[in-house]
Length: 220
Picture 1 (cartoon, rainbow, N blue to C red):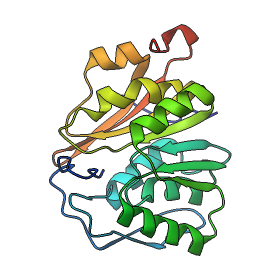
Picture 2 (cartoon, rainbow, N blue to C red):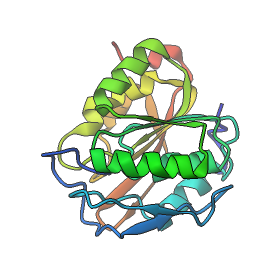
Picture 3 (cartoon, helix red, strand yellow):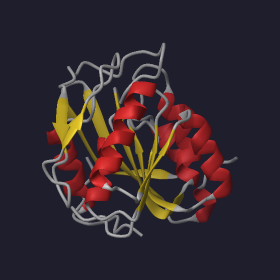
């Protein structure tokens, strides 16, 4: 289980035909910034609206998480380049499920996974909502961390958050990147609390924790 209280103080990519994630301009390559694969270049395919989480934001996120994720089980529901999931695997995660349905992003992610020998990373070519729903039914409470970096402007947090929370063990974490802070009503309904939050330009990012009370799970 993640140590959810380590030094915390409160404070994407579109699928085909969906709105762009936000105002960032995508570089052609980014890099893994920590762990066994530090400095590994991650290609950014020419997919409309694909804007991966930048280095500075990922550095902040993994500072919040405590740098090492040894033994953690993670799901990246909107993987895109896969950099969030690969960063987790680089830092010791025992299992990483990366969900992506764009063919170009999938091909690049699979190629990099093979090159790295990233056997703990599983790439699932499917819709994020469908995978979240399926895993919530088959592996409830089976994960420690869910990454949510969906396309902006399409209401994805509201669509996938309830199932994402069901994936988490008590005290598990959700990393959410969005165009605005999640509504308090959504967090309350899902049994989540904010443990860290910040913004970079128009991009808001949040580390959310599942309350330990099992009764706080959202209704199925």
